[in-house]
Length: 561
Ligand code: ARG
Image 1 (cartoon, rainbow, N blue to C red):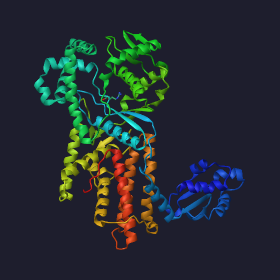
Image 2 (cartoon, rainbow, N blue to C red):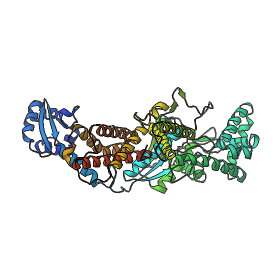
Image 3 (cartoon, rainbow, N blue to C red):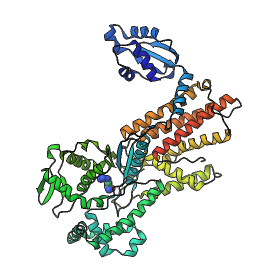
Image 4 (cartoon, rainbow, N blue to C red):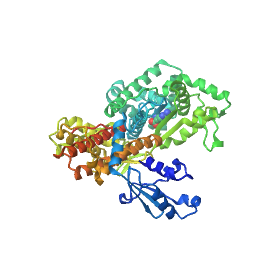
């Protein structure tokens, strides 16, 4: 519709291109002021007239378009009132003509790698990792819908000097039994113990270093312990992924690059980028206002950045990505800026296709969730807690629904996901149960509840025809809902362009609110066939879009709640 208005103006105004006109068109602040407004200030110079006069002149020339009910001048603005039936028809027909409304009709033959979740072996999967998992998964869904091939990469933190420490700790203070029984928490316990003991006895650190060196050189004893820790950890991570119904295309973590780093270090040397400083190999980035990027320590062992550089080269050669995204906390900003620069200095122009996609901290209402002070919040625990709390709300509100178990899972988990995705990534997330699980708030449960309401309306109506009588849809409430339907494709596009799932979650709330007003104001199950069918069809469209939007966030929609 905006496009059509722009065309109409464009036919009368030569000094501006259609694109310029499009960008000037505004949506008036009040519906009484029409659906679109065109400000005439820009034309004053060329026409050598006051904008008011120009608006008046233009108005005369564009009154007869059939999709408009009227055009009016409001001072320097030309205001367009769209013919409501026509507008509703266009939006609904456009919806119906799409196989994938809001997304791409065909694949675009571009590949995006998304590196997300990527927890650290032998460390707990905490709520921070939950955020990267949820954001990365949502970006994956959004890009897939938009026509991209996505490679979902779990760059497990499964290599590094910490494993030397763990081996030492295990040999001194651990037992096979305890690790088998307790899993990651036992590994964490002995890791903490290592640090306490190493404070008193520095030789433990040397011992740990030498174990990691053994790992880097393929020592079988070291590797078999490491492999076991990795397996135990992965099993725990998998149970979180299962709860979230998330999978990856690759679990090649840091260890995967162990035998690939030497060639890269060689390349860095050949390109004259490496400097030796106190025995360590570094890349000086002073010129770019950053501390040096460490490539090897003085004992020759590799670092996090070494493995990231190697992984980026590997991914480029393997997946030929158009973009590669790294979803991690903001605190890693410098790390990514440093090694992205290194890729650029190596002469790879695709350095510009690497994106750090940061996010803010997670806190519990009333305090930060610290991983160091022991009050660690495990992702699994918070998900389970949410499921349980949801379960008791359902028991209280609607104890008669079938499969309460499944519904509590979908709603409880959906609530956490939605809360994580409701604001810009960079904003901190606060866990406040009363808010997260408020069925009337701007929450996952609210949107899911709206979906279930739509489903129930359709169940009650039973059979309906495809008939849509556009005259039935001209009231303000219906029009507001139709306009929300129209907004979905733009929301998906913005979310993809800005790598911001919150645009989808905000959209879902707005759609749900518009729907609930419609449900309240416009009786659906009435005797008149044309009205009932028309409204039921709109309900069905909204239901489908809610489901699609929530699926982009990684949230399921129970049919009953
Ligand atoms: N394992 C890291 C962490 O837990 C995140 C890894 C992110 N990905 C990467 N390629 N550096 O903080």
